[in-house]
Length: 119
Image 1 (tube, rainbow, N blue to C red):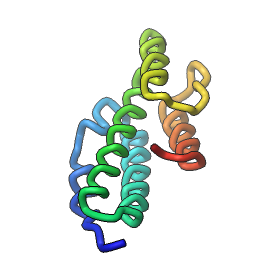
Image 2 (tube, helix red, strand yellow):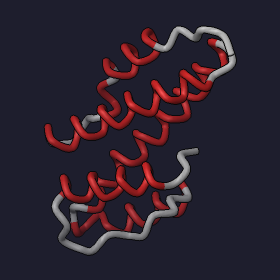
Image 3 (cartoon, rainbow, N blue to C red):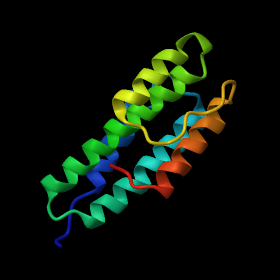
Image 4 (cartoon, one colour):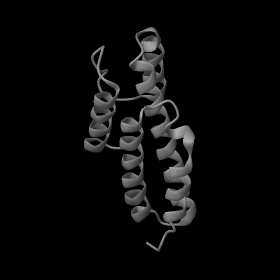
């Protein structure tokens, strides 16, 4: 494996406000930290810059979907939309309890993602 330029991809990812739009500060920080950690790991395993770009792009898409799920789930009136999103995105983690705090929800989802395979 060659040296892959992951730092520009991480900088671009961190500047992407669409990843954290609508999240609280705590949830946004958790998500960004998680994304950066995984981007670094994926970059280490990438065979080329285009490969790294593709992996990070897929990671960001997953991060955006997780962000949106958290936002939808914590609002009782949009919980049905959260379930639809979970089905479309094929989230394998168990659906959370109703009334869970958004920071706790983000923590549980990311912990589950870390202990299982990220797409």
